[in-house]
Image (tube, helix red, strand yellow):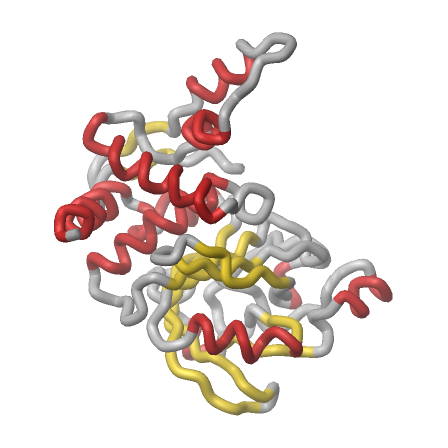
Length: 268
């Protein structure tokens, strides 16, 4: 993962990631030592170790464990997705508030790097292969762009819109809300759809998935079900360890996320 300077509110000062605990956990265990999943998650946490963030951090750690996401979604990626999710809630951008989709573009295209999660039921609903843009890379996604005609994938937070039937059959419109990083999604026709080149058969033949013009493309046999699960105003996060994005996205700022979490937690 890239080193991230953590933003403490929109436009305010930054705090370095809490790596000390991770270093201690690596250095201390001897023969027979055991590090719990909770401790391991805390060590990899993106959230500053400050009292006002403890409840938020505990919530995300317990959520991650309850859904049993280890081995499916990296904990740090999950945290970043949740921080953005609460910032989207604060901006009143989500209609269906408990569904979140995470795509981890640090993984090769040959792995299931898309996860659909029900946060209310604490359940992993789906995991799937997903293809990236033609000019983003071969098996690994390496280069990203928001520019029309780039044929590259775009990072950041999206809000799903309505479905439609297009050239690739049932498809899903996306609204890119991360300014400068994906806010040209509609102009670029970046949508979710299925395609034949996103399949195990294609991987067996070519050693990777085929590539799109920038769209997150799903296996044909899964695309309809996943589109039905995530359409109509849910959060989608496309991640890579891109330093510029991680340092500058307004949706990765911690203060607003913690404040929104606190409001909703107290209301329950």
